[in-house]
Length: 317
Length: 107
Image 1 (cartoon, chains in turn cyan, purple):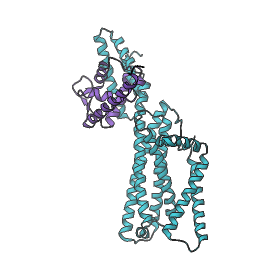
Image 2: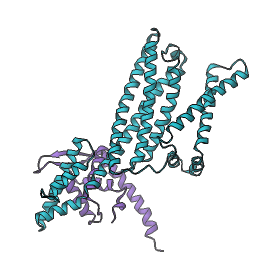
Image 3: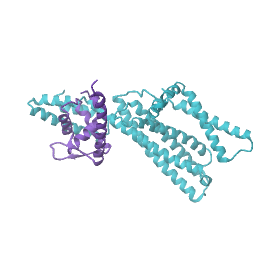
Image 4: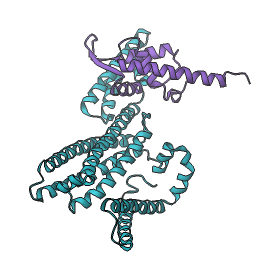
């Protein structure tokens, strides 16, 4: 310890090690100072020399790096939970607007976002946002009772939330551009949709700020203890559905096949929804062509997203 | 007792300690040590992150006290914290009874 005294030297070390916002850092150091002074006073009352009492108090408090890491863990875990929740809320709001503006015929007729490219972007953005927000929430839920979670796992929670919110914002911008470029008219419905779009955009911006704050806290934790995630989404799902653990272990070995199957299934579901919504086509060949287009487009989009994002989001090791 | 043995129980132990009345960090840790007979050997500084977490969860509240010669943060159990402590106690009794049934039974 230095000549300034064991307690002052320790507090300086702790202050330097803490990767938390300045206000919180001041509070933590003040609490540590009070604790160490109390402990040193108790040591002196027991007959120890002042320096020995201070050194004993510091030793019992624990290494500054360990204490700083615990605070970083607490903040990073809480931040990731909030980011995941904020992303879910943003995606929920967006999903509501998307569902109303595309699935209610009378609203869709007056919607300024109903034409391409805004419409096509919205269809893909809705799927990406919902999937990534769900993955982020699943991970956050899995570790809901853990006070300490490796930085690698928190990174995946943040990334899932970031991609979900990013997808929402891209779609909001596309819709906003469509609204600006569309002819006036549409009355109250159009005005309500634009107001809803503004609210969805505001919620997404708040969520993005929360994700950015959480990412900073995770980086602060990683500087002290950068343990990797060590698992993937299949492990998360196995915790959620324990009886499926064996089946998930098999699927983990073939992630691309699972991805291709999911893409085909989603394409078929979308083509079925389209055929139901638009009514039966004039001939079966046209129905098959529509289904083939949906399956191909959806399958390719999912494969492309999986290729680009699977490792980034921790979908596979 | 190793610090790992405390995993999952520290929050409940802290809530039970603070339930006796408002206290600052050092007093809480001293009281925890006294009540446990010094069984929990963990770095004292690592208790503060747990206190902060409980405060963020709304189970504790805290304020600066002006009574002490230094700035001192005093923690107090909230109504929500009192309910959480009750639930924690119930769970512990059920868990301890189940473990005792197995471990305490003669072979």
